[in-house]
Image (cartoon, rainbow, N blue to C red; front, side, top):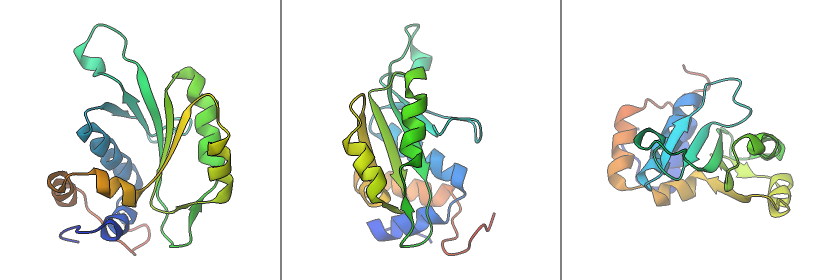
Length: 160
């Protein structure tokens, strides 16, 4: 795809990006909102793909407050949905970070179990974000940069 001009095109484009690169894309979009982010290692991260800070940890001697833990779930089929497992993993590891929010971003749908679980989490705010919403939050300038910088092959499973 040479350009992304709608939420549907953005979601399709995201499904064709290498999974760990999709995590980087989500982090960059969050950075555009003024937050500082850190992507975690590809494995052994306890389900956390992106850590969002209230301030830039590199610019201060003071410890940065973790605003959110983000898990990114790339789903390929139109009927693919996220179950409660990613949220359960974030809840389990959250005490190590003491975040304000837990966030799941997906190209798929959110199934009933995860939406039910999210409604009953009392210790953290929970945001379930579809890539359509992410598209709406992203400037056209950044979208253009992302499409130029990241290779995507929607519909070609495991092309990498």
